[in-house]
Amino acid sequence: MILISIGLISVAKVNQYADQLLQAEKDGKPIPVLTINSPNLNIETAYKIQKCYVKSRLKNDKIAGFKADLTSKGTQEKFGVDSPVSGVLFSSGEHSSPYPLEVQNSKN
Image (cartoon, rainbow, N blue to C red; front, side, top):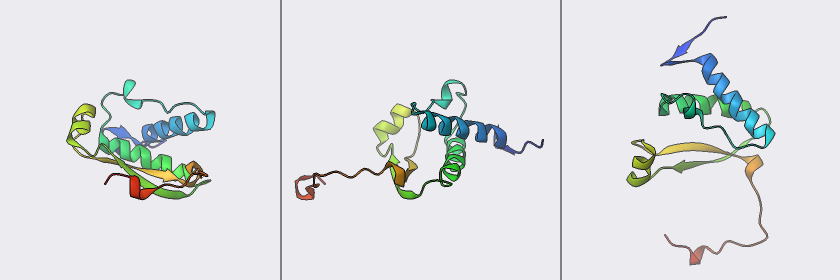
C-alpha cells in the first residue's frame, strides 16, 4: 500500500473521514464532528474531505446547488476561521412544499 500525503494528512485518512460521513448519512445519524478526535484538522483538509465525500455521493446523486456559511466576521470568529466556507447541496435533499414563498415580504 502506498500512502500519499496531502499536507499533514494522508489520502487514506481523507478517505476514512469521507467514509465516516457517508456511513452516518446512510445510517440516518448526525454527521460526526471530525475535529473531536483530530483537533488539528484545518479548512484545507476539510475541503479535501468534502471533495472525496462529494465524489462518492455523485455516484447516486446530483448536485442541486451550493451553499455558503460563516459569512460574517462574528460567526467566523465564533468558529475560529478567517473566511466563509462553502458546501454542496444534493438533489436528494430537495423537498417541495405546497406553500408558495412570498418574496415581496422577505427582507433584503
